[in-house]
Length: 86
Ligand SMILES: C[S@@+](CC[C@H](N)C(=O)[O-])C[C@H]1O[C@@H](n2cnc3c(N)ncnc32)[C@H](O)[C@@H]1O
Image 1 (tube, helix red, strand yellow):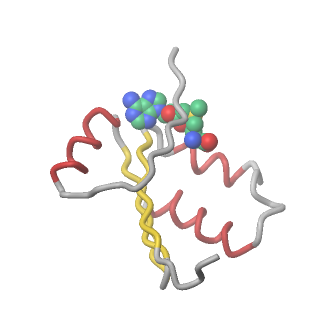
Image 2 (cartoon, rainbow, N blue to C red):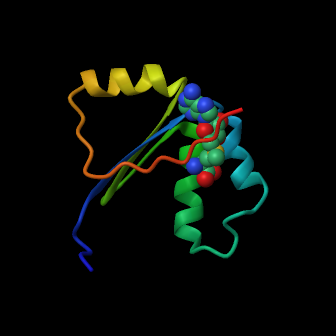
Image 3 (cartoon, rainbow, N blue to C red):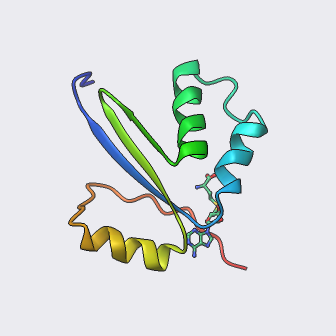
Protein backbone atom coordinates (compact mmCIF):
# COMPACT_ATOMS: atom_id res chain seq x y z
CA UNK A 1 0.00 0.00 0.00
CA UNK A 2 2.83 2.39 0.90
CA UNK A 3 6.21 1.25 -0.46
CA UNK A 4 8.01 4.27 1.01
CA UNK A 5 6.84 3.46 4.54
CA UNK A 6 9.67 2.72 7.02
CA UNK A 7 8.96 0.34 9.88
CA UNK A 8 10.73 -0.13 13.20
CA UNK A 9 10.12 -3.48 14.92
CA UNK A 10 11.30 -4.49 18.38
CA UNK A 11 10.84 -8.07 19.56
CA UNK A 12 11.12 -9.19 23.17
CA UNK A 13 12.20 -12.82 23.65
CA UNK A 14 13.56 -14.69 26.63
CA UNK A 15 15.17 -17.56 24.77
CA UNK A 16 17.37 -16.79 21.74
CA UNK A 17 17.04 -20.45 20.63
CA UNK A 18 13.33 -19.94 19.81
CA UNK A 19 13.76 -17.67 16.74
CA UNK A 20 16.83 -19.68 15.67
CA UNK A 21 14.77 -22.90 15.85
CA UNK A 22 12.06 -21.34 13.66
CA UNK A 23 14.71 -20.76 10.98
CA UNK A 24 16.35 -24.17 11.49
CA UNK A 25 13.01 -25.97 11.13
CA UNK A 26 12.37 -24.28 7.75
CA UNK A 27 9.08 -22.81 8.96
CA UNK A 28 9.45 -19.93 6.48
CA UNK A 29 10.53 -21.90 3.41
CA UNK A 30 7.43 -20.93 1.44
CA UNK A 31 7.98 -17.23 2.20
CA UNK A 32 9.73 -14.78 -0.10
CA UNK A 33 13.50 -15.36 0.31
CA UNK A 34 14.03 -11.68 1.24
CA UNK A 35 12.02 -12.22 4.42
CA UNK A 36 13.91 -15.41 5.29
CA UNK A 37 17.22 -13.54 5.03
CA UNK A 38 15.93 -10.73 7.26
CA UNK A 39 14.50 -13.13 9.85
CA UNK A 40 17.70 -15.24 9.84
CA UNK A 41 19.82 -12.16 10.50
CA UNK A 42 17.44 -11.06 13.25
CA UNK A 43 17.54 -14.53 14.88
CA UNK A 44 21.35 -14.71 14.73
CA UNK A 45 22.52 -11.10 15.15
CA UNK A 46 19.44 -9.78 17.02
CA UNK A 47 19.28 -6.77 14.74
CA UNK A 48 18.81 -6.00 11.09
CA UNK A 49 18.52 -2.80 9.10
CA UNK A 50 17.39 -2.28 5.51
CA UNK A 51 16.34 0.96 3.78
CA UNK A 52 12.75 0.50 5.04
CA UNK A 53 13.15 -1.69 8.12
CA UNK A 54 14.92 -1.35 11.45
CA UNK A 55 14.41 -4.45 13.59
CA UNK A 56 15.83 -5.45 16.95
CA UNK A 57 15.37 -8.56 19.06
CA UNK A 58 15.87 -7.79 22.75
CA UNK A 59 16.89 -11.00 24.50
CA UNK A 60 15.92 -11.24 28.16
CA UNK A 61 12.94 -11.26 30.46
CA UNK A 62 10.38 -8.91 28.90
CA UNK A 63 9.49 -7.59 32.34
CA UNK A 64 12.98 -6.06 32.37
CA UNK A 65 13.58 -5.30 28.68
CA UNK A 66 10.26 -3.48 28.28
CA UNK A 67 11.25 -1.17 31.13
CA UNK A 68 14.56 -0.39 29.40
CA UNK A 69 12.72 0.13 26.12
CA UNK A 70 10.33 2.58 27.75
CA UNK A 71 13.24 4.46 29.34
CA UNK A 72 14.86 4.78 25.89
CA UNK A 73 11.88 6.87 24.77
CA UNK A 74 10.54 4.31 22.29
CA UNK A 75 6.83 4.50 21.48
CA UNK A 76 4.96 1.79 19.56
CA UNK A 77 1.98 2.23 17.22
CA UNK A 78 1.04 -1.44 17.62
CA UNK A 79 1.85 -4.21 20.08
CA UNK A 80 1.52 -7.92 19.30
CA UNK A 81 1.45 -10.22 22.33
CA UNK A 82 1.90 -13.95 21.75
CA UNK A 83 2.81 -15.39 25.15
CA UNK A 84 2.20 -18.60 26.97
CA UNK A 85 2.52 -19.47 30.62
CA UNK A 86 3.55 -22.72 32.26
C1 LIG B 1 3.89 -18.80 22.24
S1 LIG B 1 5.63 -18.42 22.06
C2 LIG B 1 5.55 -17.27 20.75
C3 LIG B 1 6.84 -17.03 20.06
C4 LIG B 1 6.74 -16.19 18.76
N1 LIG B 1 5.75 -15.13 18.85
C5 LIG B 1 6.44 -17.08 17.59
O1 LIG B 1 5.34 -17.01 17.01
O2 LIG B 1 7.30 -17.89 17.24
C6 LIG B 1 5.93 -17.48 23.52
C7 LIG B 1 7.36 -16.98 23.61
O3 LIG B 1 7.47 -16.19 24.81
C8 LIG B 1 8.79 -16.36 25.29
N2 LIG B 1 8.78 -15.95 26.71
C9 LIG B 1 8.29 -16.61 27.77
N3 LIG B 1 8.47 -15.90 28.89
C10 LIG B 1 9.09 -14.74 28.54
C11 LIG B 1 9.55 -13.60 29.26
N4 LIG B 1 9.41 -13.50 30.58
N5 LIG B 1 10.14 -12.60 28.56
C12 LIG B 1 10.28 -12.68 27.21
N6 LIG B 1 9.86 -13.74 26.46
C13 LIG B 1 9.28 -14.76 27.13
C14 LIG B 1 9.09 -17.84 25.07
O4 LIG B 1 10.47 -18.09 25.05
C15 LIG B 1 8.40 -18.07 23.71
O5 LIG B 1 9.32 -17.96 22.66
